[in-house]
Image (cartoon, rainbow, N blue to C red):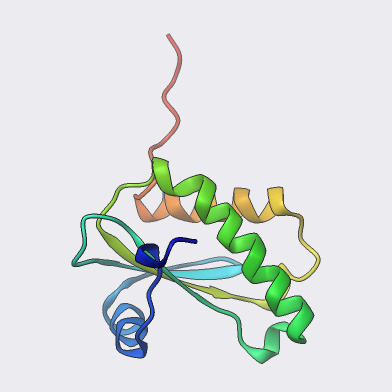
Length: 117
């Protein structure tokens, strides 16, 4: 993920988690807050309760890949923090992508499917 698309400061993570809107599922929780940039910035949180280092790194890779594919279609100008839950361990990339896409749709950042006429 490009450097400009990442949240890097602990203060930014705290600001988004404390003041942002919260959307969750069994696999992850997403905090969304209107940002200061014209593009979206993302922060990933994978705590030790998710599993060992191998599982945490795999989950981060899957989430980064899902964000890379979803970012062009999302409304821009938001800061997002994604907190991984242990239910993500063992999920495939497509399942992670679908769940993240669903949460982005619920958050209002991803356009709804347009009915074909």
